[in-house]
Length: 91
Image 1 (cartoon, rainbow, N blue to C red):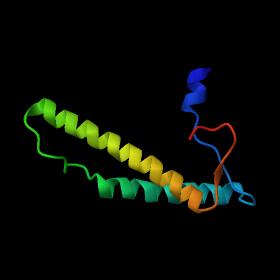
Image 2: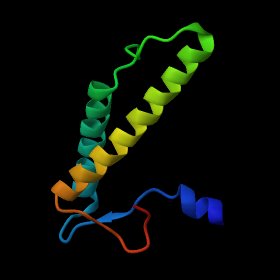
Image 3: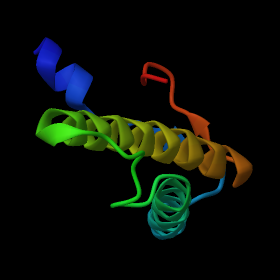
Image 4: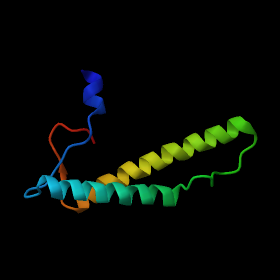
């Protein structure tokens, strides 16, 4: 039960937004966020490292950074469109 709660997607709400508007806004924000994350941390352009373990660590760091930027950008986009988090959802 705890795992299901942690894995649940964020719930956003906006007065007057129907399911179609929310789906479009969510898709737009996901696209914008993904593009921003890839612009800031493109694949294959990590800092030079030596050895296989250094390369893996660099890729993992970039993956983590992309994920952080994508999440923050998505949240900012949704808030910019007038959405707020539903009570009880995780930040």
